[in-house]
Length: 120
Image 1 (tube, rainbow, N blue to C red):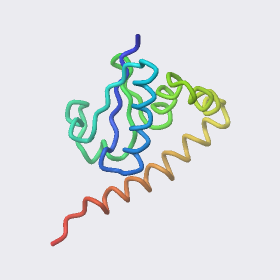
Image 2 (image 1 turned 60 degrees about the vertical axis):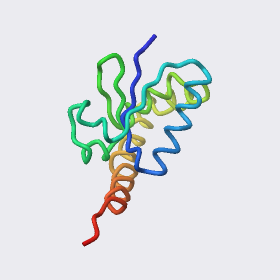
Image 3 (image 1 turned 90 degrees about the horizontal axis):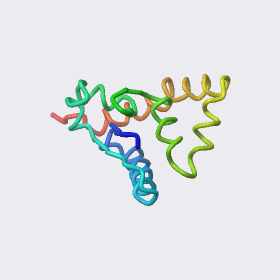
Image 4 (image 1 turned 90 degrees about the vertical axis):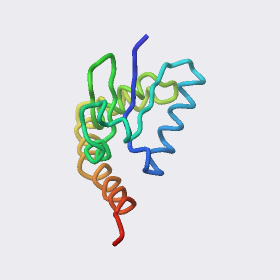
């Protein structure tokens, strides 16, 4: 069985809700899944701010980020495998990867920065 670990921005309500859904499905189906929030970022070799910028997965010691990280997770979850397959198609992979890296991730990170901004 694969050793699958997620690092995600657990301070993001959208991200936390999505990952909680993955966790419920993983428990229900018996998929071993470890979930780390931003406090675990140093153990991944990055700081909290860097960790907040993208979704990450460690699969058997190999680190993956962004769409490829999602695809690794989706491929193991019933009900999500179709999305892993679909986003693996060459043209669609390119489009989905750019959409995540240049639109979704920056928007979620900007929201994170607003939430964590210190007030004087």
